[in-house]
Image 1: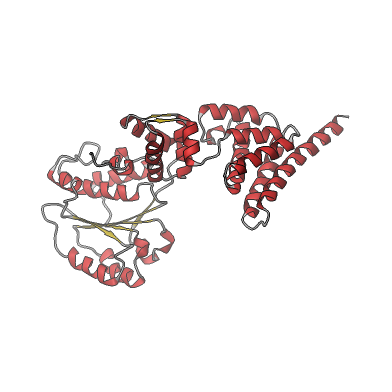
Image 2: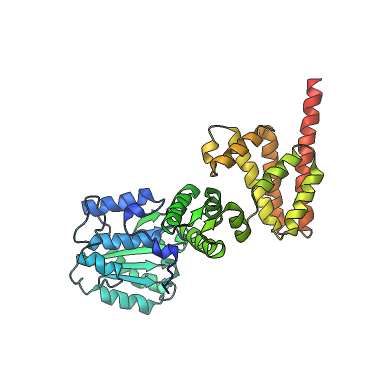
Length: 375
C-alpha cells in the first residue's frame, strides 16, 4: 500500500515561480539573490498557510545552490539542492520557536553560529513562529542578529508581527505576505485536481477556496478531505453537502422573496435552512455577503471585485437590476447589524426573522414613496 502524502506537502513549491499569490515578494527575493544584496535577516509575516515557511526554505536553498538558473531559481540538481530536498542539508537549520523558545535554546543557537558552513556559502537559520520566543530569548538573540558572521543568514517567520520586539523588527527586512485570492486558490486546486485525476466542478473548487479564507494550505487540506469523502468526481452539490456550506441559491431566493413582498416564503425558507442544521450566524453572514455582491454587481466598475464563477456573476447582475442601490445598501446595513447582535441575542432565530422583515418593510416603504412621488 502506497503511503498517502497530503496535497499541501506533495505539491509544496520547490522554486519561487511555483509559489502561489506572492509574486511581489518572490520577485524581490530573486532579485536579492541575483544581485548579491541579501540582507542578514528577514522577517516573513502574514496569515497562516500563505507561503511564509515555503518561501524561507526556497530562499535558503537558492542561497546555497551551486548552479542557479538564469532566472535565479534553485536548480534542484546540484549536491546542495539534493541534500536540501532530502532534508539532509547540514547548513540549513530550522527552529520551531513554539517549542524551543527559552533563552538556553537561543544561546545554543548562538554558539552553533560560530562554526563556519561546511561546503556551502552560507549557514541559514529558519526560525518559525518567532513571536513565541521569550523576552529573555529575544534579548539573547539581539546582538547576534545585529552583527552576525558574514556567512550567517536568518529567516524569521510569524503570524503575529505585533508581538515582535521593535528592536528585532529594526534589524530585519520585513516582508508582509498577503492572503491568497480565491481566484489564485481555485487555479491551484484545478492544477492539483488534474494531477490527481480528479474531476471537479469549478463552483465546488470555489466553495473550497471560500471556506479556506485565503489560506492555501487550508484549501488543500479541505480538498483532500473532500476527495476522500466523495471520490474522484467532485460536484457542487456533493461539496456543499460534505462541507456543510449553504447553497448560494438560497440567498438568491431569499432576496427575491423580500423584493417581491413575499416575506412569508422567506421565513419558511429560513425555517427549512435552520431545520437542516445550518448555523444561523453563518446564514446571516452569507446573506450580508450576498447583498454586498449585489451592490458590486450594479456598477461595471466594481464587478471585478466579485470573486465568483461566471454563472454566479450573471445571476448577480440580473438580480441587481431588481432594486436600486439605496435598498441594497440598507439591506446590507441591516444584515451586518444582525450579524453583530446575533451572538448576544437570547432569541437568535427571532433576530434573523426580524432582520428579514425589516428588509422587506424597507422595500415596501420605498415602493410606496415612489408611487406617491409619481402622483
